[in-house]
Length: 68
Image 1 (cartoon, one colour):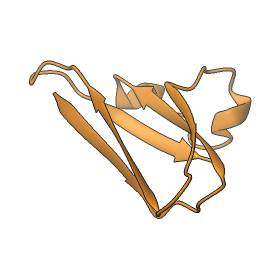
Image 2 (cartoon, helix red, strand yellow):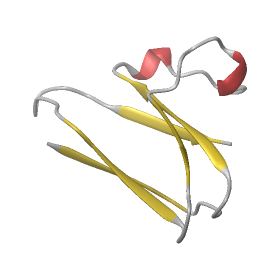
Image 3 (cartoon, helix red, strand yellow):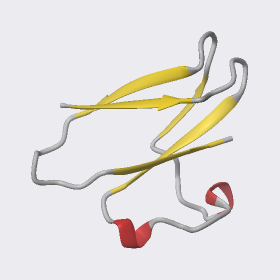
Image 4 (cartoon, helix red, strand yellow):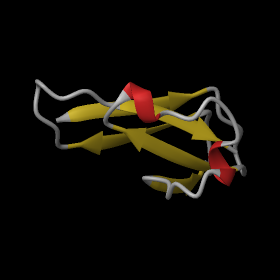
């Protein structure tokens, strides 16, 4: 199980969390405008971080980007 913690967030702000299995597929900018569906969409209700879990094999790669 992989724990993903996104920090430095602002309470009350909506975020999209994108998940990529290959670093070659990560856009360099404008994540929300690429047509790629976010893995998670969330709003932080309190605090400045949010944690998610993903079942993934230890030999797999995982890359994440959180954007407003």
